[in-house]
Image (cartoon, rainbow, N blue to C red; front, side):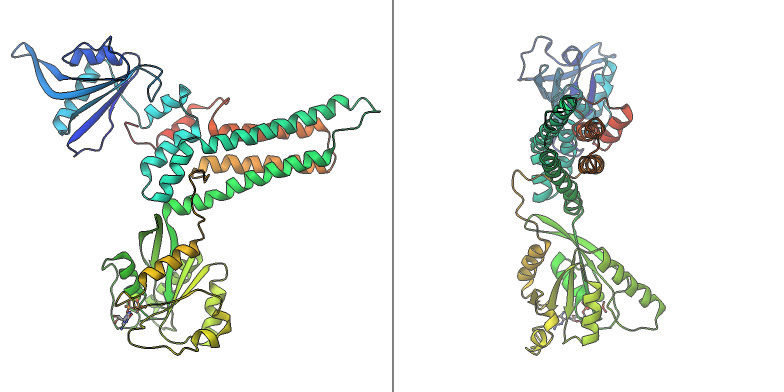
Length: 458
Ligand SMILES: Nc1nc2c(ncn2[C@@H]2O[C@H](COP(=O)(O)OP(=O)(O)OP(=O)(O)O)[C@@H](O)[C@H]2O)c(=O)[nH]1
Ligand SMILES: [Mg+2]
């Protein structure tokens, strides 16, 4: 079936309509001023989209366009395909789509072009998912991950793992083949264990990268916490360069959490301003403070703001709450008060945390703070080759591979017979194959799940 869709967002100066399928050029020829049926691959044709006017009884031009022609298999989908660059008028674009449908096209489903590209072997499933990530990428980090996956770095890593698994399988088979010959030694199981362990480590590392991938997509959560009136909301506004939260000298101004994102060095951080921590009998304020604790729980990085030396009990409480977080201590309001220099020294428990002195109000040292936040996120420079798993589907396959491989490992350790271990090994291979979709029969449900998240036209 030949499909068509608008590939660009409405409202621009130009609009691009994509067509793909065996009848592309024939259908186009009905509505274009030139016959394109014999058009050469990778050529661009200038002309008019025309429609028949029943009153005038002849064809009238609808728009002046450029048509790019691609021939199978050298197109995005692997089929005959074309792109019409029209003027961006909603009327024109709808009309062209209407004409295409009238002449035999069907409107494409979300992601249908990419789905066809996958089915025609132009890319594997992990690359197809990277296409959606690339379109959705909003910062340097997520762009880098998507482009790396699209270029097949993840796929090659998976095929390396597959090779090692096949090696393991053949060593096990060797063991089986010779097990009847009592005078021959079995394949050395410690060597097999060694290989299996290495594969398992690589799979685990890939599965772990999902957490980072998710965080990079959604933004690193950074909670801004401290006592009332220390300048948390002022700092949030400064970081966002926007008057987002109410600032006032009244203690307990912020009741609810307020959050928004900014990019630092191409990575998105999500800042969460919270209610100030203090003893209170106000019921609503207490709910707000409980939310502050929840925000700390969810954060990766905590900015703890102080405008005076904190008490021992307060330090104890905060360190307890921020146990597994990256903690940055911020001394605010340096414009009005030089805090006692002994503050970080006298409290030896705070000595090892990065400390930044700022004036949130005047914007002093905000950039220094941003760099401290970036450093705390501990994102090693994302290289061009970096592999970070961003799809939940891929993550689940990796977890399943890890579980099956764990059974292989314990089977090898406990001296289980080779054919039983091989069974589990086969499951690991299947799990990895699920990620790329290669050599697997995928149900239409699986495919639909992947491609419905795409936009129409991609
Ligand atoms: N001089 C000076 N004043 C500041 C600075 N930062 C904040 N303030 C003032 O301190 C007061 C409290 O600021 P907020 O940002 O509302 O403090 P908060 O921590 O959000 O307070 P709560 O929401 O009540 O917990 C306001 O009057 C701010 O103008 C600073 O760096 N220097
Ligand atoms: Mg506030």
